[in-house]
Length: 276
Image (cartoon, helix red, strand yellow):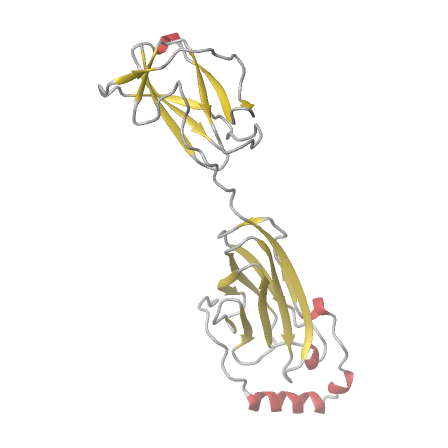
C-alpha cells in the first residue's frame, strides 16, 4: 500500500551499494555511463497557478528510471521548496517501496526503502501559507550518491481578496438589529462606503437580494424620506459612498424582509425591513 507518513530518510545501505557497483563494473556498464537528461531521470509537474493561500495543491514527482545503465538511475531524490512560504504535508507513492520524509516541511527526500531503482510516480501535497511564487526543486541521486538529474517547477500563489472596510449602511437605512419601517412599493436608496473607490464590480452575482422573514414584534424605525435615484449601483467620490436603489414590491405590505448585500470579498451585510 502507498505510504503517507512523513519521516526522515534512513541511512544508506552501503553493502547493497557495493554489490550494485561491482555488478555494474562486471557488466561493463560503468564505462557506458553518460550524463542523463533531467527529464529522463526526474520530472516535476505542478499547477502554474494562481492558487490561493492555504489552499492545498499537488506536485507530481516522476522517477521513470528508464536509463539502460545503473549510473543513470536514481534510488533517491532530494526535494526543496523555496520562495513563498509553503510546506509539504503528505505524499502518496505509486510504489510501496518508495517513501518520503520532510522533517521541516520544506526540505526532504524521497527514497526507495531497499535502494532499488524501481520507477515511481509520487504525489506531494503542498500547502502555501503566503502569497508569491513557490518553487519546488528536485535532484535525483544514483546509487553512488551522485547527482544525475534535476528539475524545477513553480506555482503562483495569491493572497485572499482583502476584506472591504464596510462600516454599515448609511442613512436612511438603520443598521441591524434595528428594523426599518417603510411603505411597500417604495424605492429605498441603500448607501454604504468601502473606504474609497473600489470600482463598480464589488457585488457578487445576484446581489443585492432579499428574503421574507418573520416579524417578531420588534419596534420598527421609520425610514427617513429623501431624494431617490432610479439608477443601479453608483459611486459618488465627493461623499465616498456607493448607492444601490432597492425597488420594493407593493405586495410586501404587512410582511417583513431581510435585505442582503453580498460583496465580492465574501462578506454579507444585512438590514431588516417591515413593510406597511
